[in-house]
Image 1: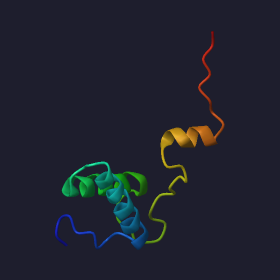
Image 2: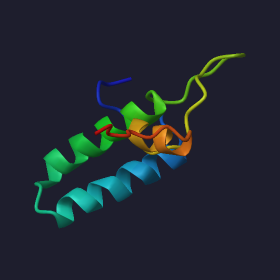
Image 3: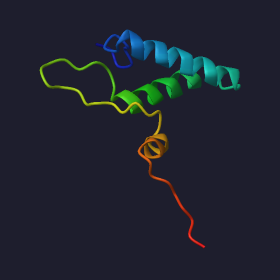
Image 4: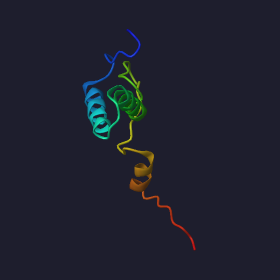
Length: 81
């Protein structure tokens, strides 16, 4: 498999990358850079391409970012005066 090949990604990961890429392009980022950033985002959130084998893979959080996960867990940053 050639470096940069996207054949090991699920269809869901490919769709996510496509939507993220479109968002970057709307903001004025170049096509190649938008694609690079989109795949980096997908890799960060899902851990890369699909992994085979029994017991492999990690449970992904449903939060889109760590901060949102903290909010959902009820942790709040309270400033004491």
